[in-house]
Image (cartoon, rainbow, N blue to C red):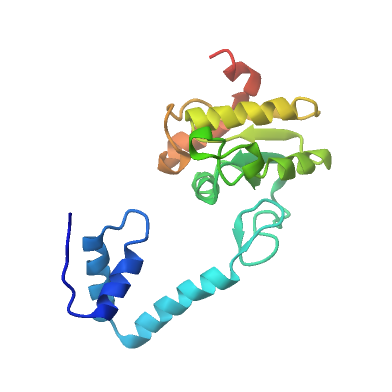
Amino acid sequence: MYVQNYPSKLLENAVEEFAKLPGIGRKTALRLVLHLLRQNTDDVDRFSQTITQLRHEVKHCKMCNNISDTDVCSICSNPRRDYSTLCVVENIKDVMSIENTHQYNGLYFVLGGVISPMDGIGPADLKIDQLMNKITEGNVKEIIMALSATMEGDTTNFFIYKKLKQYSVTISAIARGVAFGDELEFTDEITLGRAIINRVKFEATLAD
């Protein structure tokens, strides 16, 4: 176990906070804090103010649950987007990944996770009811299921598919250029872009 003796309680407290970040151990946290101590005071103040402002002022788009500075995000409010196509993703990072491919021009819907009984996450913990409400509005003609190619992602895909079958919408799934077990955020842009373009009817994936 890594044990560090700190010459300052203030330093120790700062390291403790940085070490709470995902993927940051105590050694890395100490390096980051010492780096900040070497910076100009104004730069550190600006850094801390940016984080505080982000936490207090950032919003979730009321249309798709994406991160936004306003009540409706720049994607949902863009008149040049295809409002008849809705891409269902697990989280905000997946929206960013797909946008970076420049191969998709529709709208998004962020579920906020996937069904995972092992983690205590069921359908009621996701934004599935909100998704169903969007479908009943009648503007969406195609739903693209773009959840990660994992057991949990496939389970969530199928659950939503069964609820969507009653509506007059085309239900597609991204092509399996994304290998099973992969998460979208770690898939390269070319592969992900091709998976979007070469999407298939969801029914066809059930035969796999």
